[in-house]
Image 1 (tube, rainbow, N blue to C red):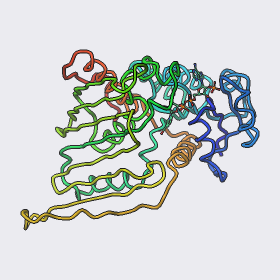
Image 2 (cartoon, rainbow, N blue to C red; image 1 turned 180 degrees about the horizontal axis):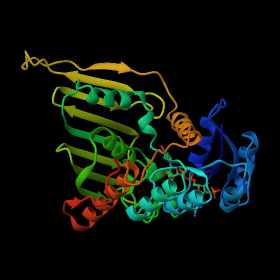
Image 3 (cartoon, rainbow, N blue to C red; image 1 turned 180 degrees about the vertical axis):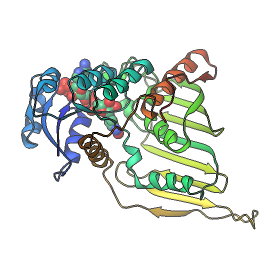
Image 4 (cartoon, rainbow, N blue to C red; image 1 turned 90 degrees about the vertical axis):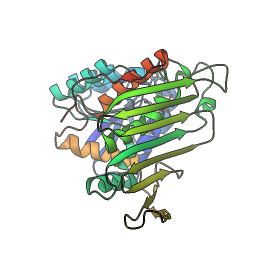
Amino acid sequence: MIRAAIVGLGTWGRNLVSSVQPPSEHLRFVAGATRTPAAAEDFARQHGIRMLASFEAVLADREVDAVVLATPHSMHTAQIIAAARAGKHVFCEKPMGMDVDEAQQAAQACADHGVTLGVGYNWRYQPALQEIRRMIDDGRLGRVLHLEGNFCGPSAYRFPRGHWRHDRSEAPAGGMTGRGVHVVDAMLHLAGPVKRVTAQSVRLAQDFGVDDTTSLLLAFDSGATGMLSTVIATAETWRLQVFGSKGWVAVGDVEHLHTWDLESCFFDPERVTVKQRPVRQRFEPVSTERAELEHFAQQAAARQPMALPGGDAVHNVALFQALLASIDSGLPETVRGPARAA
Ligand SMILES: NC(=O)c1ccc[n+]([C@@H]2O[C@H](COP(=O)([O-])OP(=O)(O)OC[C@H]3O[C@@H](n4cnc5c(N)ncnc54)[C@H](OP(=O)(O)O)[C@@H]3O)[C@@H](O)[C@H]2O)c1
């Protein structure tokens, strides 16, 4: 049983705490810290969380094995490094950082101090995404040729002027830090590293805050191509479609954190002129937040690593920096970062 402290009791921190109710046999939230403790008092009491005065107090607490960070993006890497130095396992919400060198240092600090680092890419715990991965591994999909994804919703309208979510240093490419990074992570999981990105990003709907309409063209190391967009001044929707040399699969447009449908369509090599109908498979509902926290706790208890220096979570930040460069230059930009982890 890993005894965890939640750091940041805003929307997502509370959601993570609630996700392990009914109680998990792998992870229990025993302590917490947040910038405005008074606002979290009732929630903490209901969940048996002992509130501590500061992040530093959490790191000094001997009853805490792991910290779970649900704080603004710009705080993540420094908090990961501080936790690693204090010998605490760390689960950090996405993105891991805003700068690839800092993200790499944070992953390295965890490796050096022998603590487990998890990063909150919960889409990987969706059964439908795991099925796509199996379809690639066992050859059912053929060679991966192209991926298309979007993750959209009315986020730009949810946060008032001055909220950190509208701060360009926290979210410099519109919905990419909030939403797009999940699609990037799913694509990295399914198609491997990206070598080049071309991006555009604009704000069209409101006269303040971050961009609301952002899109990317991706070139993967494997030769596959990709397209990704995030529009955060529209209704909620998301979709990920993977085109293989034997057919395509798609997920999306259902309650994305708990249910995933998988649509697939394969052509008949003996009758390529016949148009096939897609088939739909529904997977059992699952809490991806609980699944990711339990996996993290199991890895931490076994002192096994998760996110590695040069791994996908760091590469995601490298890609992010390249897309920012492309937004500025208007040109395709190479994704530069540390050597890839094996
Ligand atoms: N995996 C997912 O699907 C998913 C979904 C949503 C969010 N997230 C991630 O979760 C993290 C937190 O997001 P959120 O939506 O929970 O944000 P939020 O509701 O604004 O909560 C942010 C938390 O950080 C604390 N904080 C500390 N210093 C702060 C500062 N200088 N400015 C603002 N807040 C500060 C806040 O403290 P007080 O409230 O106590 O003042 C609050 O508890 C982000 O990394 C986000 O990307 C992930």
